[in-house]
Length: 97
Image (cartoon, rainbow, N blue to C red; front, side, top):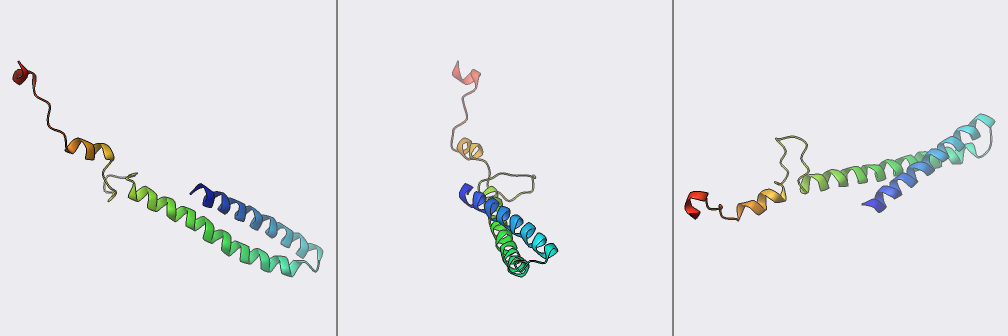
């Protein structure tokens, strides 16, 4: 998960740099403006895909592992609740005496 998050940040950073270079190339009238603009558009699609991949993967992990944000969630119950189901009730003090 961390690897894909770092990859998404790196791709997004490169995309932002390409966008700035494309902008300044266009302003100065350089021949590099068109190739950089095309490259920035393609990189924007790739960056969006990678960020969505990380976001959806985290949401799925949270749902499967029971991180609940509201009471009506369909996530699994926490592990503590599962552990407590199998144990017998402790004897009361009157029964122990």
